[in-house]
Amino acid sequence: MPLHASAGVVGQPAAPRRRSVLNWLLGLWASGVAAAVLYPILRYLVPPDVPEAATLSVTGGKASTLVPNSGRIVPFGSAPAIVIRTAQGDYRAFSAVCTHLSCTVQHRPDLQHIWCACHNGHYDLRGRNIAGPPPRPLEEYDVNVRDDELVVSKRS
Image (cartoon, rainbow, N blue to C red):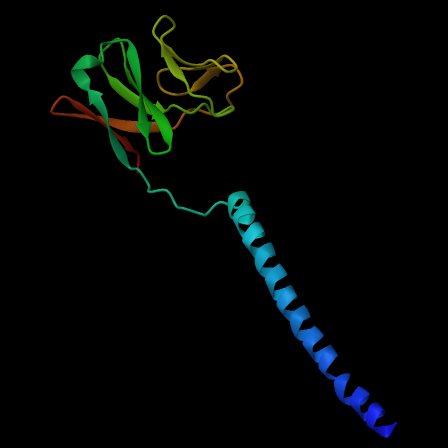
C-alpha cells in the first residue's frame, strides 16, 4: 500500500505543471490572434498624422487665356484658389473656399461677383462678403504675371 500511495504522489505534480504550460501557450496564441485582428482595425480608425507640405505659390495657367470679366479655379495645396480677371483687366486671387460651410465658390460674370452656390453667398471682387450667410471675407492671395504665366502666392 505504501508503494501505491507514493506513486500517486509522484504522478500528481506533473499534471498541473503540464496543464499550466498548455494554458500559457493557449493564452499566448489567443493574444496573438486578438492583436492580428485588432491592429488593422485600429490603424483604419486612427489614420496616420501626415503633415501636408505648405504650398506658398502655384501657377494659375496662361494669363492670355483668362479673358476680362472671367475667373478660373486652380489647385492650391489641399484647397482650391480662384483667379479672377476684372473687367478692367486687373488680376485678383482668393481662396475658393467659402467661409460659411467650405463650399467651392465661383465667379459669376453676369453679377460681377464671387458666388457660393451652396447657400447663395456673395462676395465682391475684393473678396469681401456682401450678401448671404458667409461670416467673413475670403482670404486674398497675390497674383503676378511672369512670362504669360499667372503665379498665385499667399500673402506674407
